[in-house]
Image (cartoon, rainbow, N blue to C red; front, side, top):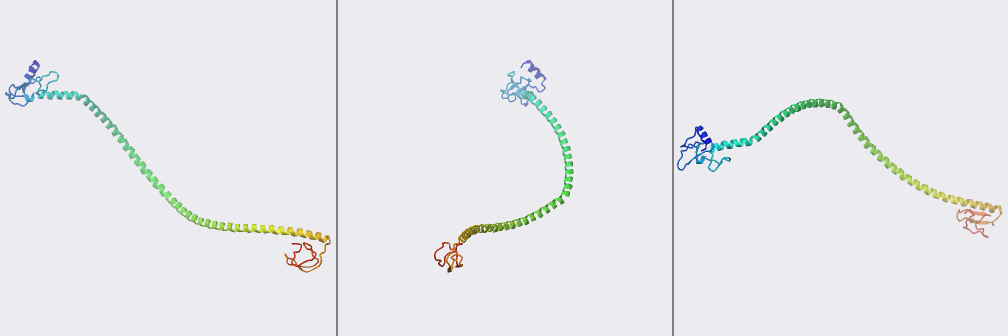
Length: 248
């Protein structure tokens, strides 16, 4: 045992050469006494960490010293993490304070919004109470307009039918007019021929052409009997019945 171990063993009140200072079991041939190179206490083989050696001294260490050393080692290793956690906790506290202030502000804002909403709701109800009669009037007016439009649509349909009938009648009149114009052109041609015949007859009269008297001679076209001297279209020597007069 080195001097430091002997010094620590002398200061250890639980140091006893006959029993293990951890389990208080007496030493024997089977329970061999071992010495902790860290605190100087005597321990049994079950509590001397057996093959577990101190890293820096490669000496045997009892379970209690190893536990304390491991605890201190873990504390030293976890110190940065603990500091980090403390810093995080501090930041969380600051965030909680900030959030608390924001929550208070939001509650105040929400209260103002609720008050404004109630005011707007009252204004809306007042406005609706004023507008609803006008809306009813507009609805009634729309219904009257729809009824008038339906009636006017019927009138328009009747007028369309009347217009179609009038157009049909106008088309018939137009066709009749065209027919009459064609007949008029035929009559005009006849008149023109008659004028020519009259002119020719006058010319014959001026030349004193006298046809022999013919008894009981009838024009083939006009069915008029010709007596005495008459201008005959072909001026034959003898006038036979059923011949045409000159105007035809």
